[in-house]
Image 1 (cartoon, rainbow over the protein chains, first blue to last red):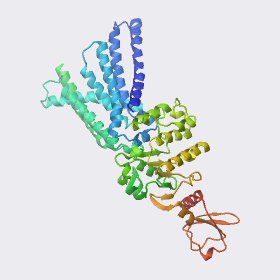
Image 2 (image 1 turned 90 degrees about the vertical axis):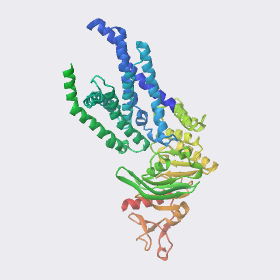
Image 3 (image 1 turned 45 degrees about the horizontal axis):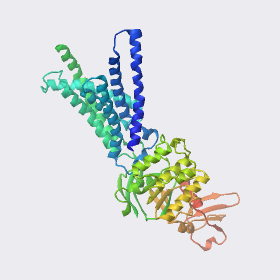
Image 4 (image 1 turned 90 degrees about the horizontal axis):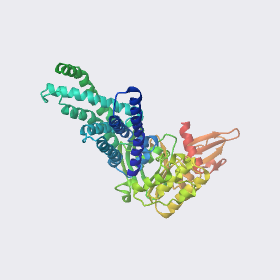
Length: 243
Length: 274
């Protein structure tokens, strides 16, 4: 089972690595046309990071791709394997490859371990994984992940602003509380909905099993959107005054 | 004994079972039948554990407690397998999950299935045989077979049934088959369960059922007997009755014994007519 999931994860990686083709192309483009003086290593580091983000989102969003595409969900559920083990076996190889890529980037690019990048990748992966069962289309799932990631960034600023207003942080540039709060506020309800669906997953149309998403994830997402709409303008104004 | 008690199940708002009860003794070979959409496949899926009851219990025999799915062989009508895997990869996956070193793939080789072929490239018959081969490797105590037999060619059907007979003669395996075509499997079946609107409308040993359901060829409906369904021809009428009881009123009519296919068709025909 683990072997199959590793194979699936490597196939997703193979698809994402196509993006690395942009490195020589970008270099040639810069040398021949733009002449901006980008160094090869800069292009490499940027494209590699983009590949990591793509893999994190894609491998998470395609967690149940083979079951959906191969119509194998019923077979999987008929096996004497607990739901927890199914999830762990699916997540494990993808996370291992993601961590390996992150480590490889740190070594190849010659920078210290970039924990912030790792945090973002993990957030992206888990958000994508949380949507993997709820959304059939990988493309729509991918767009959902992008939307949630954008929401994460907007809400982290918004929540930092709220924390600053409440006196919990001294400066608006201290974003840690905002990041953690936004991460929890967005990821936790989706992850909880995902786990609830998986726990009761049955061989019936998935649309009939998505209640936790409607009851848990969607309302909390709307709360986050409300906070952004209410406070983000004030955050920008405060930032403008500071600058 | 598999014991189903007060089973409730629904697909969203559509209820399929509301307080369903059934006992299946160990080693019995049962046929589950009824009109399309009555819940035969749903019941098999509930017993296989791929669907969960909203309410009620399914109790498995003592020997299957703990993780019943380890001892259940389930071939669904969807023939659900990882289609993008090759046959060899699918078998390896199966062996990994069930902690088997290897499986006896005699049946697969016999039916000319190549290890390098992708599952999606196999015909329905070959896929059924692959599934059956993998399931037989588990030495199951309960076999749940959905309506797949009639969708495979005559030779593979024979192979399938021969393997089934070999398994049944080797050990006391309980078999529950959902089917609408019976001429191949009639000799195996011990009990017939006819479902209707989420309940059991007929539950009889096959021999009793054959005694109780008869076709009566007569110019007019037989008096005092319950007619399941009827067919009219220019020169005669046929009445399918259940339960059949010999009476003096039937002196001048022809009473015909029925095979299982005809019996079930009579019941189902009656349901559609109603």
